[in-house]
Picture 1 (cartoon, chains in turn red, orange):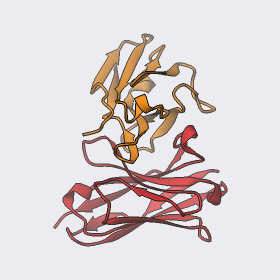
Picture 2: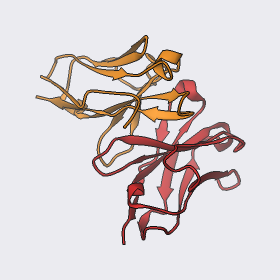
Picture 3: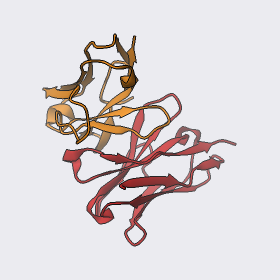
Length: 119
Length: 111
């Protein structure tokens, strides 16, 4: 079935790096744009980054610009989020989601992976 | 703080109707960008409820409906059920931020 599954979360010290992965299955990976969305403890959903279907266009929230990098590997059907210079404000559950195009919204989401930035 | 403002909470008795507002501005909702609505149970994956302001994905109950006018949008839930207790978020694009934005979120409580 159509599925997205995140991995790579964990506990990391401030200033360190972490890479999240999102494995896609059950659909044609190369047709969909992909997003990372996070939810900090007690807070709402926050869009983090997006990448176009072919990887040519990438966009970031101001809160992560210059520190996070989104990428995708079509041979592995996997989305990535490289997170550098982490701070406690980056502590959150990170979700990946897909959309065919903006009009259709984010129609499939993963279950999330938890990132905790703490010394 | 998000540029899309929702009431923190709404509540209603079983069977009643509740409406959740999503107030934006001329750089997002008012600029013509479509609004999507998501339902989120804590600890679970968010779920798309409404796309493009008022369309429902396959499998979504017709108890959920969306509308948009000017710089705001709204989600209505009719025939409220206990299973509707969740957090709800609107989502759009903001041209000033050059990025996608979620609303502040609304917790629905069934009394």
